Length: 252
Ligand code: PLP
Image 1: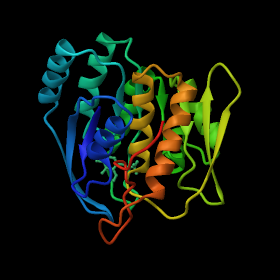
Image 2: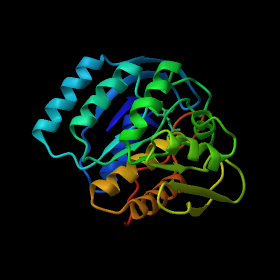
Image 3: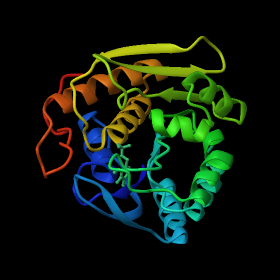
Image 4: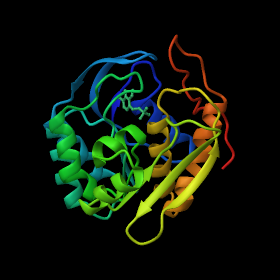
């Protein structure tokens, strides 16, 4: 996966490594940016050199089979360009893209050039993007999730999993929009509260399921159950949002 470092250990690369490991896969972690962050918010971020990332991708891919790729915070537009160029050369790998724009506390994790590069070049390489409600409205330019998802798919997205964790009500509704079928919905009981790194955990868990050979639907179902379990055991790490415990034993 490609994601950023959150030194509070809630989101980003640590979330990905823990989720992917818990689901029985071996992560190949490529760090895209370093953030200044605690459990309350993101205060700053600095991208890793894109050429270093290109060389890491090429080395790792030449050495080991890659069964799925999860992308999270990507640092800057140059990193997206390097990744897209790699994906064009490796088009058979399923890519799950969490289009990270802002931290839950409101801090920015993407500038306008990065958002444009994701929309114009990366999304069409991904088999699924997993925006939360805020990201979906921004990326699809509409407050109506179905309309926003349709716009993104018209622009080249293969499928959009609109996540409802940031909404309200006793149930979380996640909706998968695809070109081929009516939208598919999952309802999960809402635990309540805001947690740090749930979007990262969900997308990484979906990628792990795909890497293990599950269908998209089965990978989404498994990932939702995994996130729910981790939230039920969330850790009070700092003064801000609790961190889902991805290390707690979990039965698949
Ligand atoms: N990646 C990094 C490095 C982050 O710091 C954050 C948020 O703080 C995210 C991704 C997004 O986290 P999520 O979408 O899980 O809330």
